[in-house]
Length: 374
Image (cartoon, rainbow, N blue to C red):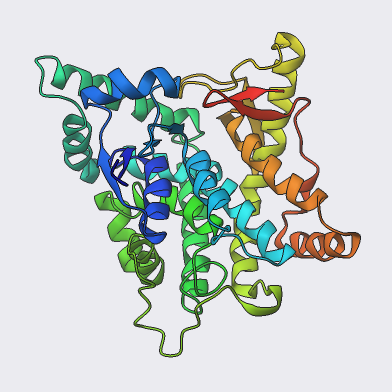
């Protein structure tokens, strides 16, 4: 038996970038294949449950669907190298994982689909993720049309576009200042939060032509972090006295707190509104225990209606955000009383303390490679 894992992913996929970077940084040997390969349908899909990426196949044939589960698979068996030991840093890492994989979908979709500069580039990748069959072009156009519509579902329209861009550029500037001090979120090595944050910042915002140029011109340090996260080595030549670990004494830099203050402006009101919408759906539908909580991109559990900087926004409410947010809340609940006080003080400084109390009426778990209602 060889020791090569198979990662079913696509270069332009937001969620694939999270898992791929983890495998690279941990030195895990893998071969990447698209879902257009026959082996995906024949061998992988029956075990994965649904055709989403990334999906990993281990050398012994185990199939693991979803980036969070792929990372947890390796973290649990290798001493958790991407998990800081201090409670403040652990909560920050888990929180950035949520924000990256779900809280930045709006700018990621906007900057991909609403700029003509991107379209030929995107078309190439969608086309070549499929086998060369007669219906290839038709399927490509259909897939691109669905994804373009998704930008609107996440709240991007003519009225909200200026605000979406304003928030993103404010966040980008703050993140650039942070990466001027440290190469990763919490110091000198990547944490789970780095991998989560990379999801939108690589494939969509750091690689598509228009937003990549924007990042290169306005936030070169962020762009370097995107490059760094896809390198096996530490990749910190611009730092002349680098460390090798997370910051000492459970430190969370002020530069990172400044980033979170900006992100909180739409993450908190949207999370609160999404929880209300999903709770209404739960009251109405009463899903059975163990029922799948995985939705197609075009599906939701109602709309989250909220205000950001005085402007109304509406976005589809989906449960995956809360599956990840549970990890933040469970991590906090397991802390000693003095640690909880310290973490809560930190979250208040970030404008993020509400994440500890925003919950769904039902918890979420995993079974048979799917997120399910408990």
